Image 1: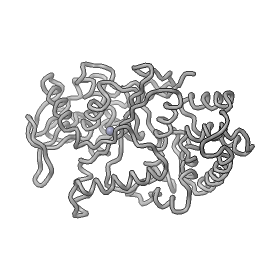
Image 2 (image 1 turned 90 degrees about the vertical axis):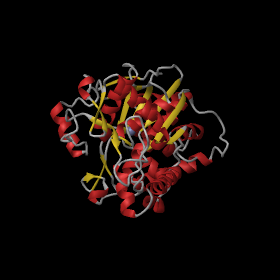
Image 3 (image 1 turned 120 degrees about the vertical axis):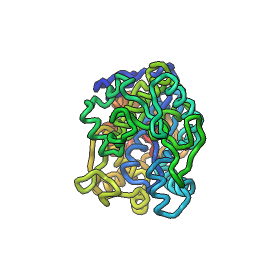
Image 4 (image 1 turned 180 degrees about the horizontal axis):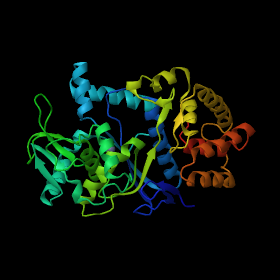
Length: 388
Ligand SMILES: [Zn+2]
């Protein structure tokens, strides 16, 4: 059966067709390690964990890369505030994230990589962009010239005005006097006193944010990938800019087949964020709830739908997690009997429809309530990443 996925560029649900019939290359923008794991992170990374498991269930050979943005403005600022070396600071929060995700039974990506491990590739990409006239040097920095990529905006569908407004909100500085035009974005920034830097043909400095992901994708997965994921707030400017620089670098090879973006998680009527003080931390939830209860709650929301955290949902998840354990215990650890092909067919049909995990859980919940088909329950539970 064919997997269909919503494509934000065309705004339609479209057939998933990897470049290579059986191989799937997937990249998900990872954390900037300056803070602890909250429910918004967990929603994104548990969804992509379930996606990778489902692709594997469908017989694809998946290569999954996720990064750590271990060098950027936030890291440097926060580590300075904490009085800790930026590398040590990043490593500390990365291990907290990996511990929390491990407790939620998330699979380790094939490549879990730091941005600072791909500086050479960034330099290679930026050098070619400069040579081919897509980038320019100004004020010690290197910028991508958006005018040279007429498709800029094809993913987000924002017009120039909307983009400028968003850039202002998201720290993109459209008023930077070194830019030829407000939407141009930084590829390489010159060294500031006391900041880490790397030597390059265009001067000592450090990378801009967008080039980091383009470089890691190129290094670990190639010129073109099948799925590029991340939170919805990454559509602009991050993913839009990744497309522009990567496609300019490779001579207009389509960079990504399918973008997939997870919706925001709200709490107390607002987007969950540290500045609003409404973060729900995964480590706190794990003190009172099982990993399966948390996973159940997360996957009971469709990845493209904004939702608000409600502790009662977690209690419901806990009830199902307990029933799931009981039902699976019947099959024994090694599993016994074969899963029912017609039930698995129903599960596949639901998941093939833009990864409808809420309906898949509805189906799993009914099977669990009925207390039969333990082998099928086990197979579906494994595919959705529950600890069995
Ligand atoms: Zn990224």
